[in-house]
Amino acid sequence: MPRNLTATTLTGAMVHNLARMRTLIAEAHQPTPGGALQVQSRQDTRLWAVVKADAYGHGLLNALQGFAAADGMALLEFEGARLLRERGWTRPVLMLEGPFDAGDVRQAAQQQLTLAISQPRHLQWIAAAGQPVQVYLKINTGLNRLGVTPAALPAFLDALLATPNVQLAGCMTHFANADSPGGADTPLAVFDEAVAAVSARLPAGSELAHCSANSAALYTLPASLQHWARPGIALYGASPFAGRRAPELGLQPAMRLQGEILAVQTLAPGEATGYGGRFVAESPIRIGIVGCGYADGYPRVAPTGTPVAIDGVRSRTLGRVSMDMLAVDLTPVPHAGPGTPVELWGEQVFIDEVAESAGTLGYELMCAITARVRRQTG
Ligand SMILES: *Cc1c(COP(=O)(O)O)cnc(C)c1O
Image 1: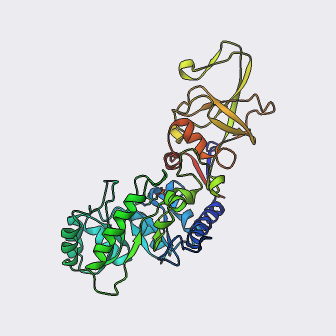
Image 2: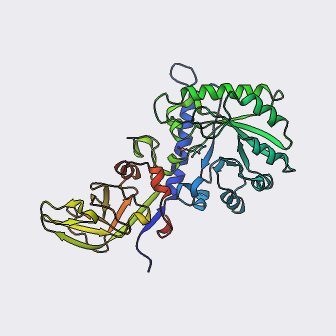
Image 3: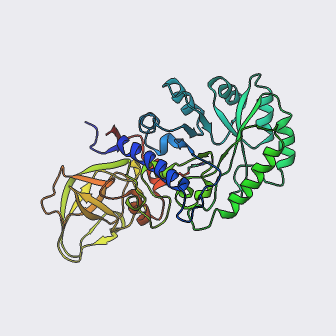
């Protein structure tokens, strides 16, 4: 029998979280009490559900179910895009990092994928594709990863407009600091100016989608809710903000990682548990050994005190996490023994709490579950 350690994807929570994004958008488009619209230009904002990295570790096919009501799917893996098409996803698909070779461009043309482009070689591959390809032009507004800078935009646009097969469907940018107050104000202004410059080069009446908001911006920057938004983390029920948890954002966790107690030890004062003896008992204590470790994706750096829920009762980890096991404090659950379920994260312990304790983000934890963990959809 495989070990009793299961990552369950909760597709009902995914449905809820997507609907929550629609509510945020509706609120942003509401007239304010003063009479002015918070968002002047748009009636509605469509949603790309970001499903890169196997839907942030939740499984791409689960995303098809959970995000069936999305207007499009955005990811960067071409194999994933192929799977979406094979499984019947007919709405738009946006490839966030563009093509990686000429073959990707041919696939995009055949399967009607939209490519985010920013590099001269992207244009060369598209010119050679022999068929029309839809693209989003990616603008660099300060994150300085991918994207054309405003300074380089006129020359890139010349090249783009001279390239055969290019169908320019929109412009996008990705914010570096949408999770801090005001952090995306200037980048949004830079983006709007760049998009205006692009529009000015197109025939009158051309439609150009504007797309900038990630999860954080959906909450903090209504003005960034343009034609399309691109939430990722919020759809999985985790927070894009340090110190703010899922419930206050109206989100439901979409992943539960649950294991069980394999053995119980009783430590006398002065005895320790785990490598390095990092936890030493001050008084007699019962501890549970849980079948989950860093080879399953649980963070090794999570220190003593990281929250867990043992049979529904919150408790804490003790000592170092090892490759296959970790120890928990059974003091608040005297009835616990071998076979008692332990939630590492989920609805009782938010993934953001574990991440905070381990000095990382929910994003990293949900993507890091390894292949030996049993998978379920609930
Ligand atoms: C991952 C990603 C997103 C989603 O970001 P979240 O913070 O998870 O909402 C949006 N756009 C791009 C380009 C991305 O790479």
